Length: 422
Image 1 (tube, rainbow, N blue to C red):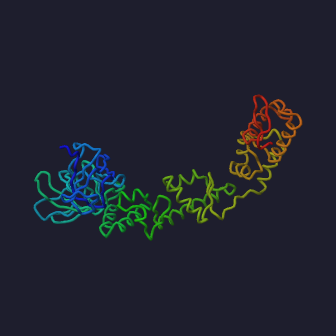
Image 2 (cartoon, one colour; image 1 turned 180 degrees about the vertical axis):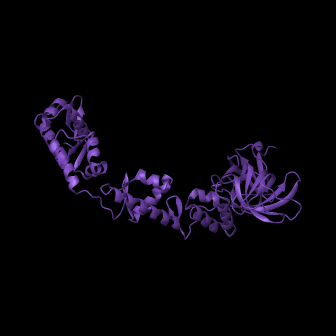
Image 3 (cartoon, rainbow, N blue to C red; image 1 turned 90 degrees about the horizontal axis):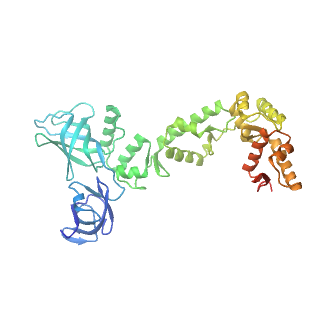
């Protein structure tokens, strides 16, 4: 009393110093270290392996409990499910699936249920299991624990944490068993990270920290690429790159006049998180494997087809229509939307929604408008309609198009030349 909140425990990893901000899990409360003691001596900093007492500012004594973990902010994530290797004592206890276990790790005691992966073990035998805790705690790969039977108040076995955040729990028992066996052979955190990457293909830096304890840069692997905020397995990168190439070539063969596969279509085919997909495409663009713009992606060797009899007929139809061309919906229906899009993209046709004009008509229109303003001055919609020799149906969209591209500018009911027209 009078000293504030003091917590004691054994410092398992990392150092702590006076003035440092800490996080208390599982509640996530933040506090600041006011003073540090170790073995009854006040010190400015304490290293791993020492019994430690910390005077904390910013947290009430009643908000801290036995078994809580004092951590650095953002470096840990609590869990209530873990994949483990459990060994039972050779006594009269019969291992069972289900509840009725007490899970002890560090100084915490938690009610738990055990679900064996595969066949149920007998007394004195080991098995892989999913352990489900009734409240969250902090665990990591390699942590050791004890299991006690709730009814008998008897220690019945113990084990080691193979995965503190097993994803997804819905995997088949065979897949979970294979994952557990691989983890048993991991001698250190780096090997454990390699296993995670081989299973998932990619991990964010912050996820690596939470799941393995390795900070960014510490987890660099010979079999992985560091791209943006991700560490990506080289095998997964190669497989996914080949899949992207397959989708692009398939689309290009079916749509030879398109600029490439729309990003929305590629997104649906890949079923990847947006951030991972962007990192992947950026790397493929950087290495020259693909070409991408804001709306489409194509292989580097693909050249869209823009010349042919069908294209020439379409351009001629629009050119002959002059100031009263067909709507884009009509052209899409008759010639196909990919061809119309390709000619608009190439500049031979100009979309003045909802109509499509020829490049020559728009170029001549700009010249007429510039001459009219320079010789006579600003003009109205009616003046423009008469100048072009068309109806209001076409005149209004044309004027709005010229305004949008900055060739003209509206001043009340009049139009003057805009920055592009001047």
